[in-house]
Length: 379
Image 1 (tube, rainbow, N blue to C red):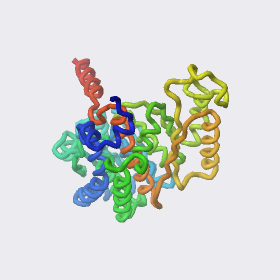
Image 2: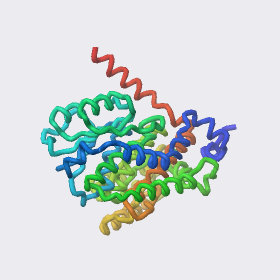
Image 3: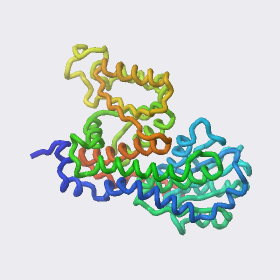
C-alpha cells in the first residue's frame, strides 16, 4: 500500500529511518550551537582585530552554507549599521578593500578554495583578518601565519546545518567593534527562541499541530516562490530556498519585497498558475500546471508600512489566480530573535519535505561530483 506524504511524516519509526544522516537532530541542535559559539568566541583572543577600532567596512567571505554568515550579519545590523557589511562569495576581494577594512573568512571545513584565496589576499593587502571554521584546517593555519584570530567551531555535520555555529562568532566580533548592536543576552534570547520552535516542530508532533510539517505538506508538489517582507526576512527567504535545494532536493525562487513586485510578480500570470485569467473556470483541468506555483510570505514585524500593503496585495492577487499562499510571521523583539524564528521553522520544514517526498535529506552527492569534475579539469 502506498503511503501518503502525511502518513510518512506522522510515522515516527519511518521518519527516523528515512533520515539516515540525522538531519532532524542536527536542526534541533541550533540552540546548543549558539551557546557553544558564544563560548568559543569569548575564549578567542580577538585583540588583533579589536585594537584597530571600528573598521571602514566588514567583508565576510564564505561559500554555500558558510557564506550565509555574512548575510546574517548584514540582516541583523540592518540599514543603520555603523559600518557597511559586504558579503563575498568569490575568489577575489573587491579592489577597494584595504587596511581600513576587516575581512572575516568563514569556512565550515576550513578548506574552501574560494574562501582561502580571498583570505590570503586580505592578509597580503594588510587587512585586519579573522577566521571562523574547523580547528587544524588550512584556514586556521593561514590565520596563525597572519597572526589573526581564529574561532574554532564545533561541527554539526555539514555546512548547511552549522549556520549558528558559523554566524555567532561573526556577530560577536561585529558587536565588539560597535558595528552591530547585539547585547550578550541577545544570543541567549535567540537560543531560547530556537528551543521553543524545536519543541513545536519535533518529530513526534503530528502534522495538524506541527507548523513545520504543515508547511512541508503545503509545499509538496508545488513550485515555491518565497518572499521576505524586509531585508531581514529576505535573508530568511534565501536561506529557506537553499535549504529546500539541499535538504529536499527541491527548487525554489526566493525574493524580497518591494523588489519582487518589480519582476517576480509577473509569474502570477505564467504557466505555473492554476487560473491565469483570474477564475477557476478560465482554464480546462487538463491544461492546468502539473506543478502549480505557491506563494510563501515570510513576514517581519518591522516591515515598512508600504511593504505591508504590498504584502497584502500579493496575497489577494495570488488568491484570485488560484495560487496557494503560506504565511509565516517572525517572532521576537530583537533582529536576531526574529531571524532565528523564521530560519528554525523553515529548516525543519525542508527536512520534512524531503522525507515526505521519499528523499533522504542528508546526502548532497551531486556537489561532490561537481567538485571532482572541477578538480579533474585542473590537470
